[in-house]
Image (cartoon, rainbow, N blue to C red; front, side):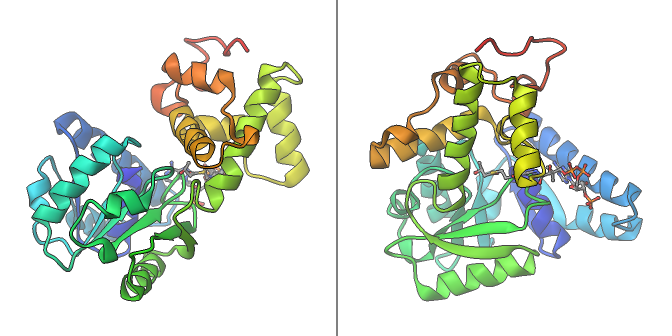
Length: 278
Ligand code: 3HC
């Protein structure tokens, strides 16, 4: 999602530095943005001149130290607390004391991340939805320590990048994922129990509720690993059986079938890999 978020800020006129783990990730990030911008140009939604402006505002690096002058940082590293902790300790050291540090976590505690820094009042969750350039919602996740000034500023920034901010407290799943991911999990359970085929499950829900895509297609888009992480955090927080992850979801993640990002999921990559056996 990092590349999508970087694109959103650059399109809104901000100078953006995208920090990636290595050169291969830089190349992937740049290619992702290039593809999205080319699509917008070919559809006449962006002029070549506007595209050149966006390209000029967006640079990539592999060094976190390049964020020494950043006013606002959005972290979008994998959903592992040890990695988040490493990143936030570095950001707290590298960035000026006034810099706002936001995490795009979809499942981890923003409070725990904020507490690692010397500026917990300036740390929030800024939760984007897939695909980040398209989906309008961003959740602004506050903790017991977040200041009013930070919430106001982050909500203002969210509006400037064309998003609709919704403020939510730091509870497992926040608002959207607390509802959306158990729904995806329930769809995986239906598939697992062979109640219907993947196409029938998706088509039924899509047509019944007028949604843009069915739950198993959405699982492939979001990433099975992300869905599983959200389910596990909901389970940890509430110990409610309705938040128990489907065994198939867990097995698919163990098998590396993560959805579009790995080329294999419920649908993706089915030329090379068969439909998952429930
Ligand atoms: N990057 C950038 N732009 C993209 C894109 C991508 N990956 N995918 C689609 N788009 C753009 C297209 O260019 C097009 O733009 P335009 O309207 O300006 O021409 C627009 O989105 C519509 O795309 P398409 O016509 O190709 O396809 P669809 O109409 O089928 O839309 C979709 C695709 C936007 C993905 C739509 O199916 C959708 O909204 N699906 C639901 C997505 C959803 O629910 N996301 C939330 C997931 S939960 C989450 O992310 C939280 C996390 O923490 C787990």
